[in-house]
Image (cartoon, rainbow, N blue to C red; front, side):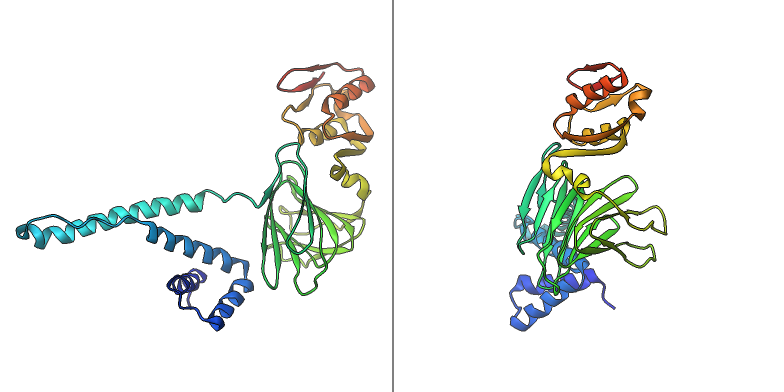
Length: 309
């Protein structure tokens, strides 16, 4: 049975030769839509063909008839080997260097975009998002960071966000996904979603409006969703950090997501002090000063960091 790469190569060569009629194009589209791996294999196959098309061809050899019989095969072989080596190096670079994300934010930046189907995507600080829509699916990949989606309703085209091994699927709802150390944190602000971890053997988890779930990739059985303050959990969309009992250390970690000048807490009282309230994501210095006053600590700062001690 031919592999996905074999089938992709065959389609790429037929398309490159310009021999696809309407029925064959429809067959190719159906094959590409059937599995996200098909589209990736097809793109790789097209890239290989482009490399062959762009490869330099050896100039005609200028040798005397006396040497022609044995020089020509050797010259062609050497030229072919050199061309293949160059193409292999180019292909290796193509495969090793990831393409730029479709949408991205820098540290401290938030961005909202309208997608092709009318859905909204809001990206938090230092986030990267890829979007791949087809006739039957809406596939997105969050490479890093955090994003919130308001999904345009279309039951015939599921909206699925992949974050590593974690998948979150909806047809018309609003939810956020965030990469964390243990896995992926999902918060649902409207409707409900289904989420699961590849290879876990567990059934998809339903997460309803007002609930949060942490899908961990290091365990087999997931904890059930819990009710949260959605306004606080999604305060970053307003440029705020909502604190409701987090320790100074946890709060500092949140502020550090938005700044190139991190907060370092060396005072044990400040590290464990629990806080309630809202701060602007850009107010790291003000937060540090407030925490220092509450815990009778000292604040020092320089161009590299803010220290509470």
